[in-house]
Image (cartoon, rainbow, N blue to C red; front, top):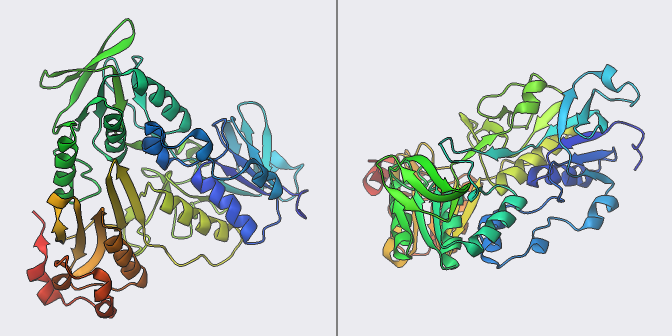
Length: 440
């Protein structure tokens, strides 16, 4: 490419966001050098299957790769694997030998990489359990490919599995363990499952659904210690004195955005790297994307949110690439997310935060239903359980910036697609209040 003698773009973090940023730069015609640096020894790969198909054996390691090995050379993307950047400076004097450079990074292996543009796509790290015994062999986390390989091997030999954390990762891992015939207990400190993401009615459905499949679910249960013998886990001790025998403990209690490099550069951080709607950080030379960021609400611009999803990583990285090249970004995308827990397929479109009422569509007892979220009579999100048609219609409606009046949607006998003609007008607030189930 024509810009090989210049410093080019350095992307730190070789996950979904980092790769998408590099791909988009090339798609937009950028000819400058691109260096993509990742700490893992693997080329960029898919993470969602790690807690689902990979654990159950329905997908192998070869199916995880996002691109073929030839892709990087064919697109003049230098992929650096298995190296961590320890030091980074925004100072042209640090890279005076590279035309146009505004700074340089140095890896733990001594590799020095000058750059004229910098992107941070460094992701997040698993939140660690802080109790006695948390470092015993058999206490596992699930964030990357090596974690998944280790967990898969240990699952094969385990009989009693305790999952600490009733969020999406924990429930997906629990479903995978049950599919392998293990005895599974889920321990959640809060009073309901996946409470940060879904309404209480959806939380209650998932509690019942997992219990019907043989998983024991303990809510409002704190972990006080992990017990072991000869360095290996034997049990989980709860705050109320309950002892749960365990051959394997999987911890899924959230993640912590990786902000170390941003802080080293003096970039503003607050529970993540702060970016604007254009993926710009507080430094004019640096963009950021993916799980490491905190951003304005992608549809309303109100407040700050942190979104942990492939969709957000791709959308935000695409925007970041456009910003680096001074191009207008694409229109904001409706956030969407999915979680496959065995035969339970949850699809979410929109962000339900701040909702003031919900409408249930269908019967949860059939394990095929939707919950639509409203704020002031206007549709803002959907949780669709084994209901892909409802999900697709609502996602389209939210993309168009319209709504479906709540009084129209409750009857599952009427396909939502038949109501699309009504979405061109705002939902009337007066009638909406009677139709929506109020919070609490």
